[in-house]
Length: 154
Image (tube, rainbow, N blue to C red):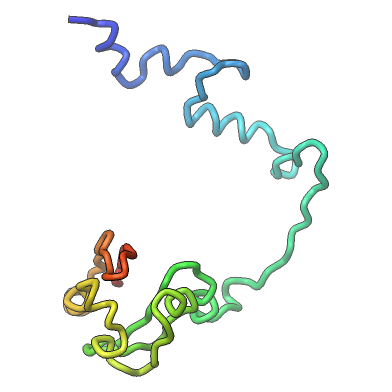
């Protein structure tokens, strides 16, 4: 039995807790890295600017409360379709969804307006989520075009 290899696998060994300097080829543990990050902040709590760069000016954006759900979902880079009711009528699709699958009519049942959901076998999942009230995720479903999608229904 090789005790050296066995003990190296135990959590909390001395090797992990050993002090490191900045020249060490071994990266710091997560906790040590976080401590080093928090130590390198200005008195107001912001990190210092890298040498040779001008400090960035904060650009004020709209407050989250000022945005509608449509504006928030429209800014997401992932495809989002909002459906409602027992026949899963299309309430909204964002720009990313339209870019991936084309424009979709609002108010139409998903089985007719979103044929990609049938191709991904998501329609039975929508019924299950509606009945149970529990979110479900289907990972890495492929379409006939070769694209792969992970679908979350809430």
